[in-house]
Image (cartoon, rainbow, N blue to C red; front, side, top):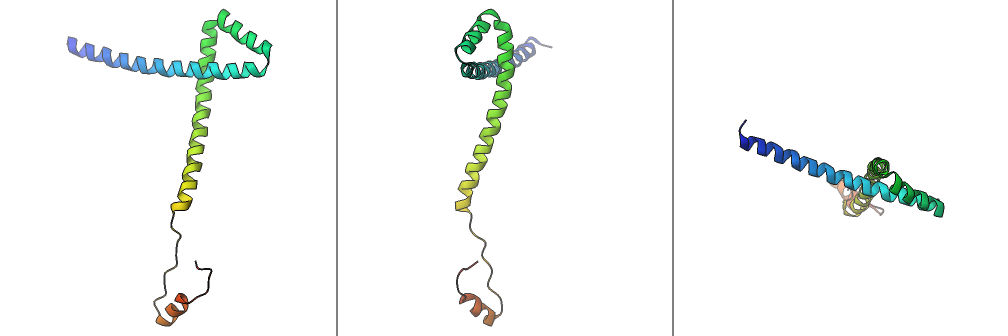
Length: 121
């Protein structure tokens, strides 16, 4: 392969690596916030343990935060999709036109249909 091809391959791999690093960083942040919320519900001792684990076992906490963040992000996405579907259904409820019956072909029946009493279909 030529040198130009190698630079293109390295550039594409670099872009993929940057994208994956940004995704992983997002999962770590979401996971760290979720673990912080869980620790704060445990009270002051939970917060002390949380910060002590970050100081003493940072690599383990990074992995645990990334895993927690992945599952939290999945749950957030599912909840967001449900919310969007609900909002879409509510919006469509007012924009859909009701189905109306067609008038009959026979003139006498058409007269009865046109002069019927409410409620109309």
